Picture 1 (tube, one colour):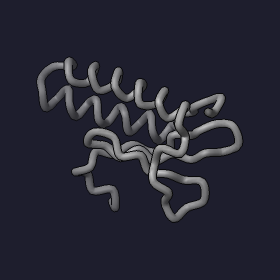
Picture 2: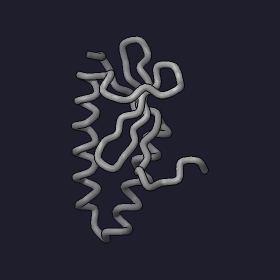
Picture 3: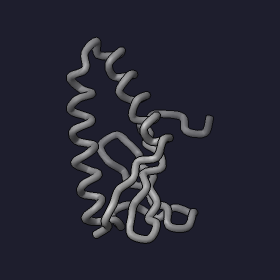
Picture 4: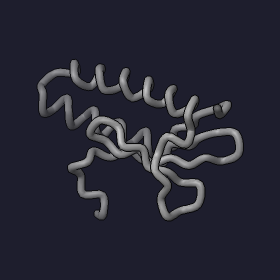
Length: 94
């Protein structure tokens, strides 16, 4: 178990992008509220089980596949840093 979970600026911008997209697509923020609640529950689970994700080619960096999303995170000393969050259908090689 790690002591702290840090969400990077990039990851916050990713969350904002996902929420904005869903609000525009659905014409409501109901899905986005459910998404955010579930995401932070997943973050709590990740704090308890930091090696839940799949190792990537980068040192101490993991990929967690959650629902329809990819969550990239790094384990650094006693904390986890969420690096990025993408929907599986996004083109991340932009």
